Image 1: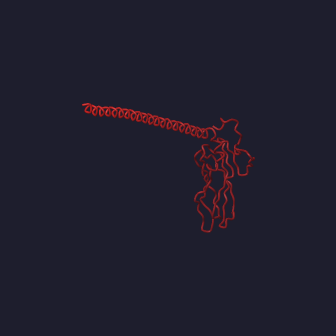
Image 2 (image 1 turned 120 degrees about the vertical axis):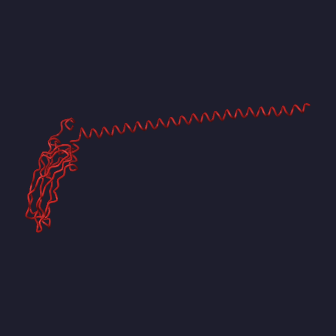
Image 3 (image 1 turned 90 degrees about the horizontal axis):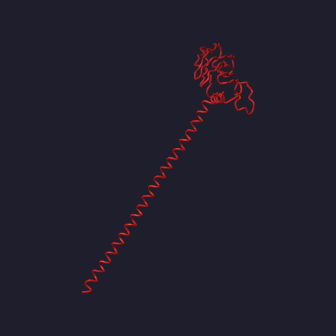
Length: 207
């Protein structure tokens, strides 16, 4: 009789122990899963925070760049155009007519002004060249009142000789831009703004 009770008791005890071990294992697994979930959420929040910080830093950098462009446009734009005038002020001739044995007719000189300021006077030199590039004659013209972001043309005289016309800038004057340039103007070494008619006394003058 005792053996009949011992075996079931042992089996029952083993079952209880196995059940307790399984429960402990499940609790441990749940703790690990919960910890993993917590770490995952923390990493996700950290990534969002870093992305937001990067976005804010980029916005600050963009604002600084924009402010620099605005300052360059509205504070120093006259000085900018003076220093880089060759990119904005040009002179050219049209498609003039040439005779069978030489000579030039219907010649126009055009000054283009892509700055934000009008030009009062632009003096140019016009050379009439023969076929061998020898200068036949040279004439000087003054084009006046070239509007900002505009152009002005002037007809040149006909020539009985010559097959090609070459035009060059000699001087440019713009009071609105405080710009006085001439081809023979001496530039002092180290002068950061050599073509200003008069030195600016304050930053407000460049507005």
